Image 1 (tube, helix red, strand yellow):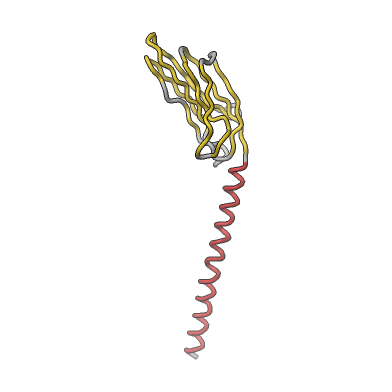
Image 2 (cartoon, rainbow, N blue to C red):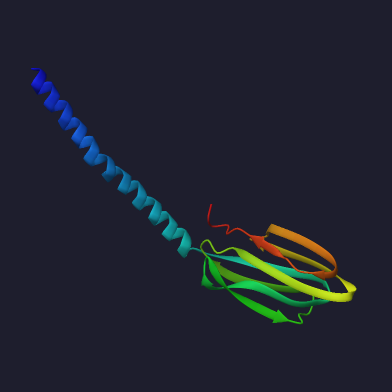
Length: 140
């Protein structure tokens, strides 16, 4: 009888060991499917830059890869400047105005998505660089 119980326990344990990874792989596969869906989803943001004496504006325009986006540049922009772009998946939205002037600079950047401000930053002084970076709204 003890031998029968021991054999049954081993069989149940072996089934758990074999089935456990199968259930784990299923959960992992579902996570990969979810990431793939998010990576393929597109979203629009609007970049806005206001102020004075801005030399250039760099921004993620939607090209490249999520973790290595192509940066586009506008030299000597007319302010206020706005640009609506379509980004993909987990690619962060980013706009970086650059200004340097002895008379002083004032720069504000803003990123909006569906009318909601994702981020806004202001800088002033002789030189201003930095900008606004926002997480992708489709990642969460």
